Length: 433
Image 1 (cartoon, rainbow, N blue to C red):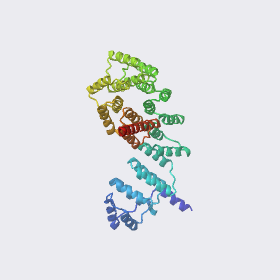
Image 2 (cartoon, helix red, strand yellow; image 1 turned 180 degrees about the vertical axis):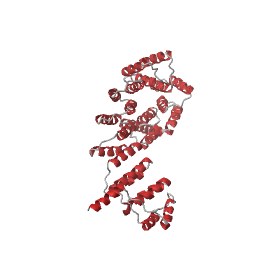
Image 3 (cartoon, rainbow, N blue to C red; image 1 turned 90 degrees about the vertical axis):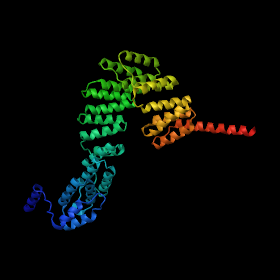
Image 4 (cartoon, rainbow, N blue to C red; image 1 turned 30 degrees about the vertical axis):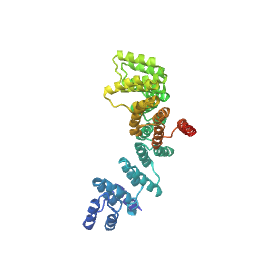
């Protein structure tokens, strides 16, 4: 018994060395290393195993050599060895391979290894689940990232900084700042300090959505964490309140920004004008612009784009076109939002040629359109009587994965029914005549 324990201890202190490779086995080894990623390594691996009678350390030595020389071949051989008896695959081998695939953004390969792992009765441990959270967060598969994250929480594992960061960014990228803020609070409760950039990422996400309550809450969290209010936080609050149409609150933070000695930039000014637009406070908007211009501010694409949108909704086509001309003079590429505004304006004004020109730009950039933008384009086309184009955009919208809202469906159907009824009436009149 004592001798056995001494031998076991010796194996821990002096790990097993790989067997020396020579003769025919060396030739087979060289052939394996020389394989291309398209070759099937199975026959040579079987021959190598028969010659060497390898243990796990021998297989690991071969894998290390392949990893240095041919990554694709390494992945293929490593996966084959998971079912090789002499390799004695354990959970670490599976998680190591999943991690390697994940780092190379090989999602399907990583998921295939994960499936083999569970089919062989090996459940993911904390390291594997952590790899999955990072992998799914990185590729934007929020549902699977949440599954892996919740499995870690359910098993009572202590989550680390990187894990929290991955989930926060996954929610931010999925435009779900509320859930991202919850993770921030979980971090704080676990005595892990979120960085300023984490707070700001969530802050930006709330602001971009026009969620002023969420933006205000995360700004409070930022202050409680010891970070100071600065120009960027003011700009983000202007954006949040601006998109929500709360012009008074937006103006308060806009003015506070100026008190900090910062001249609001074009984007911030555009957000402020947008707040006035929601409330249709054109007088206040023009008054602010005149005041800013006296202080040396020059409107840019962002501010002009909001003005074009506003003037278009007021059916002031000529005035809107004058602002579009100023955008052209700046020499910058017009943003997508501008084309949406122009398509809506020209469609509702019945200016067919210009409406279809704007529509052509939008169709070419359909992948960039969101649900709200699709709906506005279609609504404008229906209002202007461009029924065929409206149906086509509806099909594009659904092809992009956005459902058409019920009110818009009703408009489309009503317009189509009205046109059909009108055509039937005209045919009846001609027949009678």
